[in-house]
Amino acid sequence: MGSSSFYDGAGPCVTSEARPLRDVRAQTPFPQRVAPPGGGAPSMRGPVSLTPPMEPQAEARTLGEPAPRPSGASGSPTPDEEERTKGGAPSEDALGDSTNADGLWGLPVEHAERRPECSRCSRPQKVCLCPYLPVRPLQISTRLYIIQHPAEESKVLRTVPLLAACLPPDKCTVKIGRRFSEERDVELSTVCRDSGTLILYPGAEATNLEEFILDSPVYPSTIILIDGTWSQAKDIFYKNSLFRLPKQVQLKTSVCSQYVIRMQPTNRCLSTLECAAIALSILEKNSCIQETLLRPLQALCSFQLQHGAQIRLSKEYLLKNGLYPKPIPKNKRKLRKMELLMNSVKI
Image 1 (cartoon, rainbow, N blue to C red):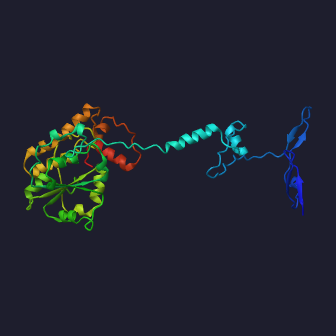
Image 2 (cartoon, rainbow, N blue to C red; image 1 turned 30 degrees about the horizontal axis):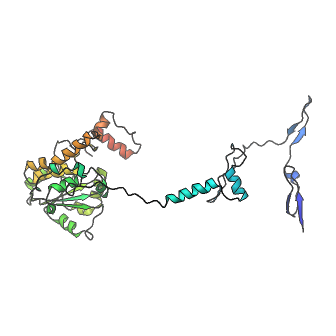
């Protein structure tokens, strides 16, 4: 059969393939014009839909198709759209902009140069802290192992490089990572199984270091510290079975942290360098060790405060005095930790 045409009264004639016709008027009642009783213009009367009209859904478009024009936008196309519709060549301005953009990719990339660092204290040479370090490394018999979280390695104001610069290289070993096993780190496994090894981590099962050395039949020769935030240190300690082999100890001290340029959870929390300084002074029975190790930390904080840094009060102090800047969390676990901090409960 040939093709037929039909006209809908609202636009040009549309041609379609011939197919059986059906009486649409019998299925869809069209509104009728009815004159009002008092005269006047006739009005439209017909079935009224009780369902609100649905908004047309946005059609999916593939990459490269132009976005649909908003309903309130002008109906006239822009000059660029006319050129794309007609298939004409782009204007000279468009070609010039494209050429300039392509030329940017050919420019050489200037890499930012890092400031030269001191080989001993790992600080920039302009703010070197070597004058505050001991002239010669401290002579100690205790060996120190520091388990450092990878995120601490990239921080600028870290304390482990200052600690390592004060001690002999064979007495201070830094291990970077989050997971350790006997197969991958035989040296660390051997150290953890040694009866003379301690791990410094507070907790209910930890013994005070001063009390432990008085009753221990074997005097400690090695101590392990975890360097990272409290959540990072907790993750490392509890997810590595190796670190539960040594005897767990903690520090019993009322000293407040001098690392004032970094926020601590409580007033009793200490930095890695401060913990090492106190622990070594106890194990070596020499109080001068603590003073020597804290000197570069004091210089670091003093220099930062002189150049715009601010004293960071502990989270415990801010919560108790209503100065905590962040909104109270909705997470029950975090909220419980904040309540413990406000009540000075060890967490």
